[in-house]
Amino acid sequence: MWISQTLSFFQRLIKIKLIILRLAFDWRTSRPVRFRMFFEQAGGAFLKFGQILSLRHDFIPPAYANELLNLLSRVEPQPWPALREVFIAEIGAPPEKVFRQFDNQPIASASISQVYRAELPGGEMVAVKIQRPGIREVFETDFILASFLGGLLSIFRFFDSFQIQDIVSEFISATRRELDFREELNNSLALLAHSSEHPQTIIPKCYSELSTERVLVSEYMSEILSVETVLERLAVNPGYAVELKERQRINLEDLAYYFVFDIMRQYFIDGFFHADPHPANLFFAPDNHLGYFDFGIIGRAGKNRLDLLRIIYGIAKRDLNFSSRHFLRFAKSAIAKEMELFKQKDRATYDRYVKVLEKLEEIMTDNLHADLEKILAPWYQDQASRDYHHLTSSIVISKMILRARDYSIYLPREIIMFFRALIISDMVALRLAPNFDIMKALNRFFDRYPLGVAEELITARVHEAKLEETVDASAHLSFEELLAQKEAEQEELSLAKERLINLIAAYAEDYQEVRQLLKT
Image 1: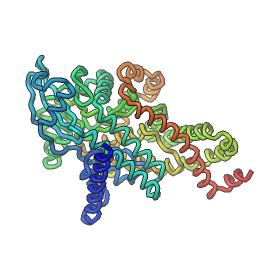
Image 2: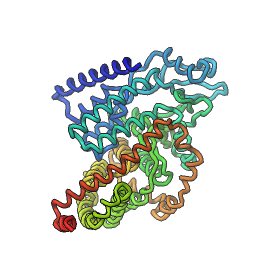
Image 3: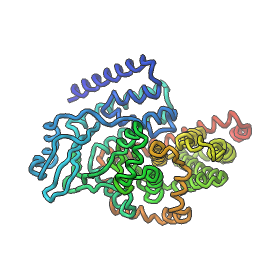
């Protein structure tokens, strides 16, 4: 077994090296595009790794992260007999015995699975998602390779040693969850429960009794249009928007605004959101309905979302002081977490540094306020200018994340995931409706959920209670994954101390009062 695994590892390593060499000499293509092409050509788990990296505006330059949003997940389909064997192994019977009709021509093909159309004995049309045979073994080889490359980059300090290991671990953990379709089943059930109160949002129903680790059966959505297809048609025929409005009562401008509203609603109100809403995972239906596919990458809002809600409220209302004040509260809570972890890890060292840390907090508060004003001010200038409407959230959010990192404030993963979802929704909305205004979209959310109402819903944990009834977060965690969670907690303790010591050293160079406190 180990000989086979070693051989697979070196075969993949050689393939990756050849792809890198080929792209390195493609001088006609920009670096961000070549970066994206690497993940597409490497395929396998590296395609997923590229999608994870697109979350990390705090780690890679915005131009590269935004280019990764264009990663294609469509790949050549495998022959039907191989997928049929997977179905039989999982369900215990061939498709022709389970369904009244089964079309063995795939209607979609991605890196992990292929999707087929079928009809249940009761007449319901369904989509049958079947995992590609042997894909788990391929991905496990890529996991080893990614860990090896990540370790190599850390040794040579090509990247921040904290960040690269964190990203590789996140990639492996997220992809292993995605390989278990029971996780996606759970996620779809939660999103379906929440969207029941919002009839304009469509979440396809899943059939639990016919779904397993490698097979997922869900409602087949007829008379729908993939948003990816809509954008492709708009690119060649701008008049297509008028045709959709007349023929199917689909108003692209209205749906652009609703898309941003819905992502905001999922995150802030429900606390559970679709974290990968790219055009291939979205569809429109007649009468202005928006639907979602593929629930493998889902985010859960953390306890910091109240502060984040207030930051975005201030941005929407063009109240810079309000946003700055709550961004500082948000930043302060992030530092407080680091300080508490530092205290747990090394109480004696913490006690020696406590006055220094208090002074750092004071200095950072003043500096952050000034920096945030510089970042947000362009959004409030010359609102009549058409350029204003094309200031995408990607620009401002990326600057905020990178500025926070300068203060050793590492935003929680779920907030980075939400920002990515918001960036995608903004970019898609601008392509659907050229006059789309992100500020107007944010205000539509606050028109439906005024700040006080949203704060009350979040504080009362109304929607979290519903989520806990619907989803069992640890239902399918393996022993290895539970162990990895424990190791991650221990690693976080160690990193907290190292980050704070580095922060103290950096401020000691620039501020005499910090140096003085260190001497006492």
